[in-house]
Structure formats: structure tokens, C-alpha cells
Length: 117
Length: 112
Image 1 (cartoon, helix red, strand yellow):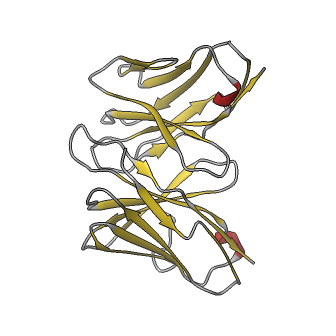
Image 2 (cartoon, one colour; image 1 turned 45 degrees about the vertical axis):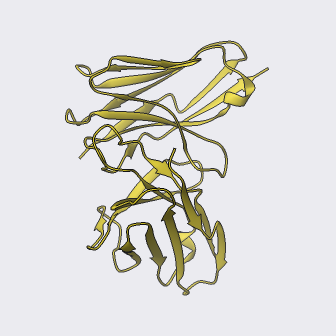
Image 3 (cartoon, each protein chain N blue to C red; image 1 turned 60 degrees about the vertical axis):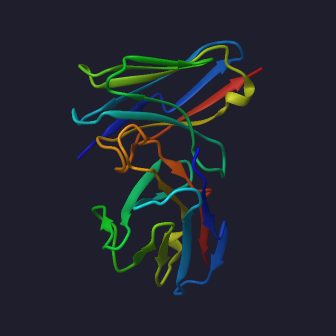
């Protein structure tokens, strides 16, 4: 299957700082990537759809000014958590698929564990 | 939008028994239904998926069934082993390349 990487795998930051998480598709060009958030013992909640060359589409209840998404190339999407607070502590996971009919399998990155002190 | 319900939330079985996890979905336009296994602190791993033109799919000890009329699909694991212990998520999407909507997950515990 496709290889998706994420960096960093784990980050601890102070409240009020910003944190950037990178998601890379290593073996195919991804025009669309997805960002999910997962709280402990909970399901994956879709935050936003990242579109290469255009604005991201955010799910209801997700603040676009707080969770900045940039998809400047076909292999890289970044999620920046601005002015992080302890309630932003979570597991952030990206995913992507090739997006053509019959190839809708989605592959997930390894996730980023964010802890805000 | 799509809503996916998953049951049970926890499931405990003895090694060698079968395990069944059920999901229902609300959007009749959904046509892709994957199942993911997630171990603690790891990424979700695709274990099997089914598309709406197929009613059943099997891969060794794992099978998935789909009933489009009733809008439900199920995961069946036979001859369970301790290493099958994990959280299992069902999901649905209605178009290739669109986001997945996940169920709440089932924590499967297989005791030896």
C-alpha cells in the first residue's frame, strides 16, 4: 500500500505556542489529504480536507483560523495548530488516497501526538 | 451528512471463538466501506474493505458482509487469536477520494 509519513511523531509544547505537523505522501501525488483528530479511546474525527492549490475544507465546529492547513505541493500538506491550549492535546493523523475510482483505499500516516502544557 | 453507528463498543472472546462487529450507515449514496484495526498509539491499518457492488468479501480469517438495502455491514473474524486484540473501526465514504466517516470503534479483547 501507499506510504504516508508524518512529522513530528510526538511534540510537547507550552500553551500559546504554535505547532506545525507535516504529512507527506511518499509514493504518489496526492491532490487531496485529510486531517483527523483522535482523543484517547475515541474515534477518528475528520477535521478538514486539504486540497492542493486551493483552500482547505473544514468540518463544522473546526476553527479554520486555529487549525491552519496548507497544501502547497502534491506530496505535502501541513497542519499548524496556532496558539495551542491544553484542550488541543490529541493524536493528529493525516490520510490520503489516490482518489481514482476503484482506488479509494485510504492510507494513514503514523500520527502526531501533541501535548500542550 | 453521513453517520456511522458501530456496535458493540467492547467485545471479549476466548481464543478460537468468532467475533462479529456490526455497523450501520445513513447515507444511501455511500459505496465504500473499509475496516481498520488500530493498536494503541499506532496508525489505523486497513484490514479489509468492500464496495457496494459486492455483498461479501473474505480474506483468510476475516470477512465483511454488506447489506445495501438495510444499510449495514459487518466484520467477521473467525478463529480469533490474542494478536487480534485491538480497536476496530468501520468507516464509509460515498466517492473515491473523499473523506471517511468512522464509527466509534470496538475494542476487541481475545483471551487465551
